[in-house]
Image (spheres, rainbow, N blue to C red):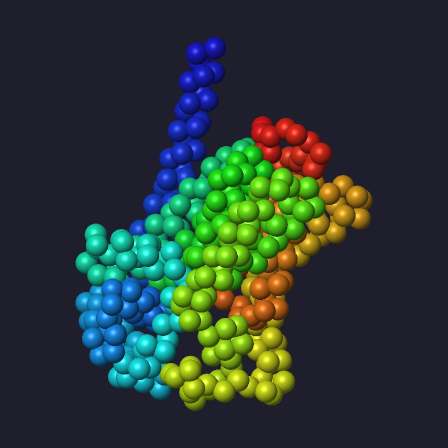
Amino acid sequence: MFESIEKIVQMRLLKLFYAICFSVYVLFNAVSHPANNWDMIGYVASVVSSNGFEGEELRKRTYDDVKSYVPAPVYEVMTSGDYYREVVYSDPESLSQQLPFYKIRYLYIKFISLLSTFTESISQATVYTSALFAFLISMTTAWYFSKLGSFYYIYPFLLLPIGLLPIATLSTPDTMATFFAFLSVMLYKNKRVLSLLILAVLPLIRTDFIILVFLLLLVRFYQGGRRQEYIFFAMAFFAYFITNTMADNYGHLMIFNFTLIPNELRPYPEEMVMSHAVKDYLRAYMAGGYSLIVRGEFFIAIASFSLVVKDFASKDVRYSTLISLVGLLFLFIHFLAFPAAFQRTYLASNLIMLYFLAYRFYFQGDLSLKDSGKFLSS
């Protein structure tokens, strides 16, 4: 008896060691090889602006902070060689007009602002934030995969194709948003209140994750949720509305044009005129669609689609069916609204679909909607 207990403890310690090793690798890779992407400037400026600085002082403090962190050759690339970057660097008004694109990530801005009190710069805080939440994504994924027997040992090799390593190096809110999105979905069946609390604030990290909130709301309608649960969904929609209002967000059409359609006035988005040429929009969808299809994770969506169709055709709709459908619809709706095939945008939906594919392969079934037992029990 004691020998069997000892073996179980040893196996669990081995699994924990395995998860820690990979997660620490993700963390240190992100910290030691940061992408130093241009968005770092926008987020640093947002923190500086939240401290009450404007105009030339805002510009100077922002670029001084970035310059103190990134290597000199990288700083030169971030401030020259491109018309847009040169104008934003030289004109305080142009920099100020970029802020609404970034300030809508309210909780992310607050988090890096808080973390920057413990780091050498705000820029460094953006790097550490992405690395930290990438670490947490890995550990959380390991925890749930530990319930899938031998599937546990392949979980790092499932995270790699969906881009966790390169995304962890970016100064963006994507790993933070993905961690909380995945956690809220995984807690959704058994720890509903905690899951709903996370969902209520998710739009304050990334506003486009209101799509996930909406899809999970439909799941509750389908299952017949309690009335008080809808208060949390209302809170999420209110959070979405208030953060867009407070940040003076330019709106969806402006972001679409700014990001996906070339325009000489990009340094001054307040002066941009929206394109009325259908070909400009078609070109954006074609380019984005091609990028999605040629990437390996497209096959994750195909596999999930097959699973969902099979279950609905056989009238065997399970919890994993619905959540796989949530991941699929998030990808589809997000692409229709904004056809930029950034891998970081779909990290959360890919992770959700991957987990439930592995879950179904391992258990060859799960709890039906009528089952009152515990999801993921084994």
